[in-house]
Image (cartoon, rainbow, N blue to C red; front, side, top):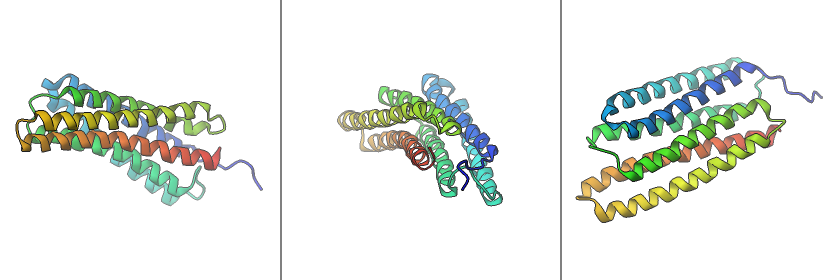
Amino acid sequence: MFSIIPRDMRFFDLFDEAADLLIRAGDAFVGLLADYTARDRHVAEIRQLEHAGDDVTRRTLHKLDTTFITPFDREDIYTLMKRIDDVIDEMDAATKRLTMYQIPQPTPWLVRMSEVLGRACHEAAAAIRELRNLKKPDGLHAHLIEIHQLENAGDEINHAAAVDLYETAASFSEAMKWKEIYDLTERSIDKCEDVANIIEAIKLKNA
């Protein structure tokens, strides 16, 4: 029995491409809230990145259909790419609400949550790149731990934001709009943890 699984390195190139998009989307989301007067430009950038993410996912799934031997289980590759795409989808949905609801300026809570999301995207991207080197998983483990900690931080900020919102919102409608934006942003952080979880599963199966 062969001890080394033949690897099609083009899959890893697609993983890296998806990781790059993840970083760019997270940075764009942070940039949107830091430079809110130019929000239309940032929202358009995130929309473009969402389309690019869909394209990478589509190309990866096509490659799964046309490749005989894959570096990991096909289901794991499929799930990983879908979870990466989900991160950017949730981010895109949150930014759309900022425009749709004509939000005049971000709250400090959303800014804090965006900073956690940006860091989670960077950590998830770093973990994705470590898939090339599963025989030496020490670096990967550190990234996975950090993502789990960031997800907990995102939960705590979202909870505190909701409490503050219901105490200070001028109307029920305003509260509901902000709650939706907070939840979408927090779900994007959750999806980063989903990425970490599938990478952990891949590590356990292949390290």
